[in-house]
Image (cartoon, rainbow, N blue to C red; front, side):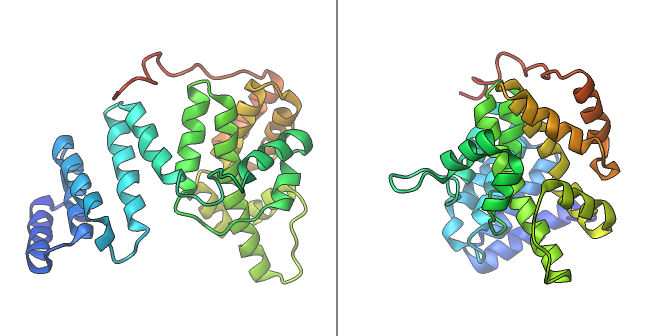
Length: 267
């Protein structure tokens, strides 16, 4: 598969399924072969087969890998409503995010952010890495681009909390006396560490911060947004979001929404 010898890969996966009987990992991998070859309908069928067999995964969280693959497939076909559904199914299983009769953590995090700012939120909350982080990130961007700014803020706050929690854990491993004090200190640490820069690039950390500021601005809290853009503008490790943030500080604006048909595609 990694050598792009898709015919051989397909045969090996089929042989493995024939030997094992139920083998959702291989069913999912066959879907990847079809996706790479542009056979999207066949890929969807394989992902669905793997999802139907999800109880057979050796690692139970692999069931979310299928939903991510569905999301990628639907995005490539511009079926954005289906993509949203795939990602929403992932975050629905995030115990920190789902509101229940006895837990309103998400509502409290949103309120703390609006009332007291991002540093206060990052000081209060720390989560272990979750299968749902990428879904929060993607949904946050998508909700911003479709004008659902409060929902975008919620999703991106969770993505940022997860990422900062991991950065804090990394820093504490190297300095037992380290304690989080502000996002500025975290960004300064990232600026000095090639390992943290690789991590933040992989998880779209600066993108999430940039669009969190964007959604915050569009939702009617310009000072929070300008503070965050101003912070990103100071650090070269922000990459392209450094220049974009500088522009936003000078002249804030909301990006154009995606096409009017986005919310109904795939229905």
